[in-house]
Length: 192
Image (cartoon, rainbow, N blue to C red; front, side, top):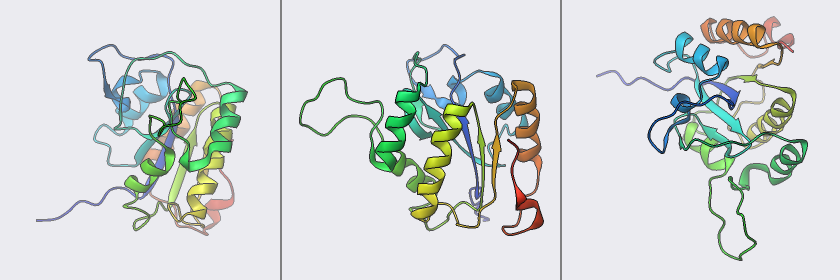
């Protein structure tokens, strides 16, 4: 019996304002229904081309198989700054009160650790897709992931931030491309 290893490519998408209705909680990959998420489901229906995570104003950084409810929240400069300041240990959603107990929610560190078998199988290539505020937080998290060994230091990082049609096309190209070898000429820079 052949064991299929998870992809060592990481795709981080911004959340979507458009969401599917359905049960109270469903996987984020199925809940989000904006153009980028529809493109992802079309280009990689079986989730074999990359492991996918998302960045959300409500939930922070999570693996796309995480179940989420339908919610309304927008990324603001203040939230982006708080996410960056909180690093890999800040729990999202943030608690509504200041009680001195363990805050509810999940933190980025637990998701990236799970996705990489606690750093034993680090990502060798990363693609970030979203608006400028989201990309800023994603870039910060990827730096932290590299420092902690969840992403190799030489991993090519593609950044896609453009009008939606261009983002959809470039994300599809990235998903359908062969993993790039680190330190190759192709690593000179990502789409911006």
